[in-house]
Length: 459
Image (tube, rainbow, N blue to C red; front, side):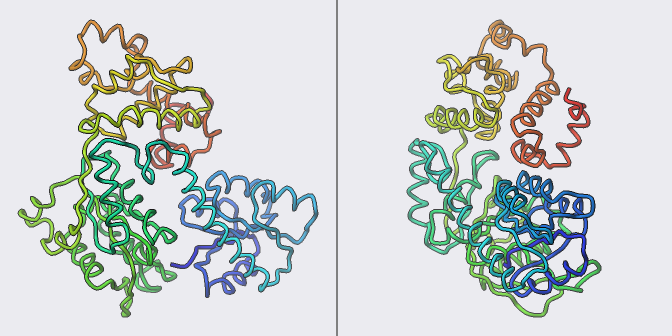
């Protein structure tokens, strides 16, 4: 897949010239207004931005800062007709890769683009490796030292460089995508792309286009060729999460990719080939779905060559302390707090809880506990705040619950949600995209909640 480049400049002639120069090697697009450029970047997927220093009344330096707040890994090359040492230094300080003076030299521009994208790729790899080195009891992002998890690590080591399909099964929240990433980043494909697709989240009418792309002119609005997810993952790995939600018609097309490593984009007569590893995940019983006729038997056998079954958290309680300290480190940094440990009572309660939401639920419990913790040690009241009342009741006496919950007995779920959102926004200095990603909701969903709770006014 070609790297995606966005030009943000209010001069149409410059935008068209740059797109024409870049389109042989890159998937290039342009925006004539700053707001339009930000909207396009917010949708994600761009690797490099050519940014004019003056866009109408908009200051390019401010726009550069907003781009870097959205995604610090995006490479940005500044363009201007009014270069100065002061503006160059400021641009570099705010994260620009380099600075080009108009009129642009196309050859120089192409060299700069290639260098910027090369460094971006190296930086992404360094960030990933650093996160792994800094983690404790980790195997490529997975936390746990129980025998069940060590068996999974051993299996990954055996299959990581075998180009066969893998299916990861397990309850929601057990970390199936982390396993898929561990397979990819420990394999010989580690320097290529890892593409994650949530099959359940894409409307059925858009699924074929998302997976296989389309050819220019194939339907109204198809103004340019668009590669799909399989093309994006060429030479790398594609992770098909919730594969059980694929419609039967789409299952046959995915089967073809697994069998022949080929597919046909919408409106295209040419067959495209890819070298890609497919990893699927599901929390449903595929064997039962095959019996009912809702999942293809031939696809089941194709994706199920290697099966990794992730245990729920209640079956690997030995890993709970390691996971708790892992989340304490993450959320202490996120919320700018110094929290270092758990009391014995709070750790005991966390060990006894059954976690219907698995690791994802534990992460939520620990985030709120870090937010509410008054000192450097998380107490039992802090962890109780996020646990469901029914689960707590099954593990403690009713009279104990009232004492343990303390002030949280007067808090509604909405009040707790508002506190978490406010804390996240403060920790991210108001950056909405980063906050939405950490909360596991869309930017639009976050904005709706900000409006609902009247947080825009700082309340």
